[in-house]
Amino acid sequence: MLNKLNDFLSALIPATGAGSRPAHTLQLATAVLLIEVMRSDADSTGEEQATVLNILKERFGLADAEVAQLSKLGHQTAKTAHDFHQFTSLINRELELPEKVRIIEYLWQVAYADSRISAHENHLMRRMADLLYISHADYIAAKMRARPADLK
Image (cartoon, rainbow, N blue to C red; front, side, top):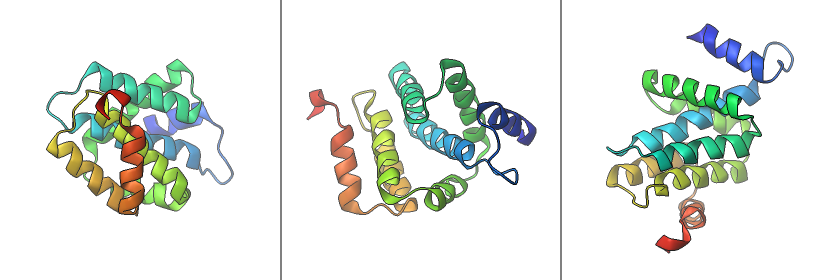
């Protein structure tokens, strides 16, 4: 699994000194969080999957094949992850508050993709916001920005 991850990350962007690949690990951490929101309700929909793929493509400027690889690796990683700490701690180390708030907005876009928010999705979103040290005001603002116009 680690070799697959390293190969994938090496293929996307060359290493940035001393073998470190922060951009790649941020991509994977973001993908896993998006996928976890998608998986959090009982019915993962095609709309949610398409939203995840679109966000990854736009956020990271990836080609379709790269997005597909990142999504596949994100699904595999999400299935084997025991908690979110490894992903949120990396995001906290590498990103500033506005970027973390933007990630919360992306997560809300996935949650809203099927036009309904389950209680579990709501709980998961609050938990992720807490792990990313997002204030309640920023959390609510991101939620409102992500909310589709037909639900407002």
